[in-house]
Length: 260
Length: 260
Image 1 (cartoon, each protein chain N blue to C red):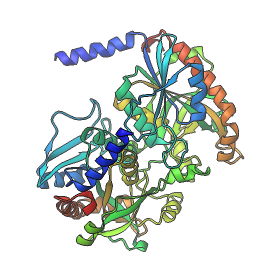
Image 2: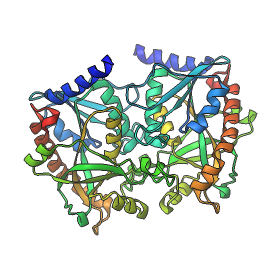
Image 3: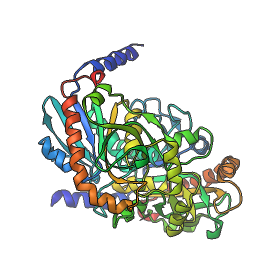
């Protein structure tokens, strides 16, 4: 019985101690670098990660927090950001193992649905996450594929900051096929990204609370082609994202998990 | 310069030393257990993996090989096999870190295309892998999404064993949407699974050679619904898969990578 009691105490303790170490997972360099500057973080010279992986850690002290920004880096062969669920899962796993964070913030850009109230430049905090491109039409496997879960609840943070709330749906494609669309509607999603539900899955496996801050670069149910609109708005919307993440981190500073 | 030279020597050495440790990654318990029995492996009592993950390692000595079968286990909440690319990536990463294998074999069932010569019960060795559900229509990102790569070349193994050869396309859905189909055709795939390209991606990142042994449970371009045909043939086809994997392991035993 003793170990059980100890771990319960530990878990309660971590809810009541001020948050000390945070992990901010960001898929694209364009999204990450302004925050690296803002928090005055340094790039790891001696990587926590194994030889061969492109994953990059920026870290430093900001106010009372150990802040780590993890970016999956550029694909070794192709030189583009390692976006998507596989890289996001791997860096989430490896970073939790190495850093034992108190909280994970997955920050990034997303597509938004105007039918659900999203506009370009809006910043959302996701209440729920799910996948829209893992269709396994066998009982129970279907639910595993969808992988719906609630994010860590932060009612005080929501009250304090001017963020919208909505459900996030994740898939590995930037575009949206009719099958994806049907799943996104079934997921009741307001925003769509390429990493969130994967980060949530790994964080849940390893019992680390996680929140999702997503800024809208493109309107999925609008007239413009997604890729074009995404690239056109990426830099401007990243500024809104970075401002929101800074506000979130400022709010977190000095607080316990149970105060968020 | 010294470390560089050392690692080159090490790499050359590993090609010329007999293969010692192999990692067999299998997504479903039904596929894994007959091989666990065949190789007389034991389940890890003290897990290599962190608390909370459902991943299972079976291991033992078979002939001159340290054989490890890694199964991602049952989903903690839902109790179904943790299939798909995210779990496959995570267990591949964590197992390579823990076990430093000389070779990875990803074994499992797959859908086959009769138009490309696949029949129920055929066992394929994949020559190439790629993804069919990561559409990112931005130059270079499109290639990253597809993630096409050649598998480790094993001409002698192919000559010796009665396996078919074909390209493997991977996605997180058991069914096939029209968008998936177009990508599978573009990938020139004969077989379709839910893990292969993810295992290959991680193995490549960490410079471990990997091969893919896939047995056909259902004909994707046939008349029967995939889920029904898959479940109907799973046990029988698993017997063919297990026989093929045993032949592959017997062939590997005592050989160097360069002799495969």
